Length: 152
Length: 338
Image 1: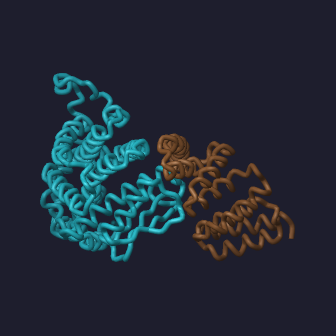
Image 2 (image 1 turned 90 degrees about the vertical axis):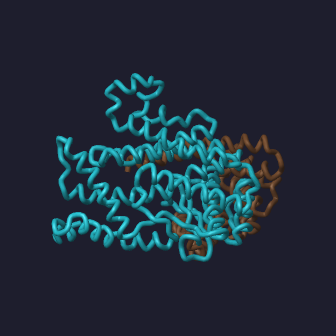
Image 3 (image 1 turned 45 degrees about the horizontal axis):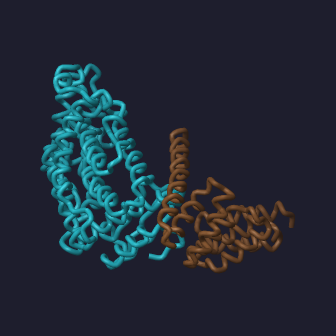
């Protein structure tokens, strides 16, 4: 199987995941990873799926694999933060989400997660700053979405 | 409540508290095609065993939190009413539809006399029930919207900026509603509809202490009334515009809204009794708005199931009401084509 075919499997898996058909999605992700374990996106997508199905601990392993392949892969850091948050490990969640937001300053989820973790750690003022940044980005995206809708 | 999505601390606490007080379950659901303001599907309205708050999938941060806070407050009000007394909504029956449609028709006729371009009869008849249900929807939503926003504002200071953005957006959409039909809708109803939203926005502008939410400034049609002197208002051509009238009626409605809501202790202990009191305030407020708009015999307070059944039967109700008003003048062919 070629790399291209492995990517196609990922695409199919993602399409199932979007429709919350998790079992089918997982099967495609697994196949893709068997054929191309060097794609950080594949590990990241499987981590997302594991989180969505309540398996945050396993998701952490996949996030780490993605990060090992690409230290600067922002989505994996963001997902890692979310997995830690779900496991109530807020310090680690804060570290991961901070890394994600510095790698990609436009990642709403990362900024928001950073705010949530700071809040949980009782660092309210810093949390407000992170929330503020997340809201700013979310509003920009929302306005863009509205414009697209009007243009449709 | 079990969710894999991150939630800010006050929202998580509020969700847990709501579940505990109402002894119910709440699920959160992301939907790509969800309404921008989200949707609450609750067990006090529908025959289901738990509650679902649906919000747009692209809302991942505080916008999502605000939608949850808003619907959770609404759920508390509905749940408290159900547990402490009886939860009722503004519904309609065959008879009330006939009364409402007759009134709208008479008002429309008055307008038509002075119009150069008359509305085709068929269109005029079709408009009657659309307007009737439009006001029913607004009355079931608008007073509660003011109460819910005030409550969220006072209880969750951390999401105030988000709330302001959301309220601004909602306000703009509400004010844009009916605009394309301005020349078709009888003046009285256009004015009352705009006045209701104007009053709500003015109330929220006073509640949310940020001067960005100022309907008089934000709505282009309202701008000319800003800082206008009474004499000027009474003597200029603006006294004849629907927007001027909306402002006058809206100011009166604002008084109706402000009076009970200014007396609420928004930071009181959030118990079932507290939310039941909010329900009673919303109930009375809706009645006052109905009275002010002289729609008293158009609607009835009934259990939510009654309204769902009324929606299911609306074509039948409309048909019968039109027959009552127009008798045999309503031909079968029109009924078939409608």
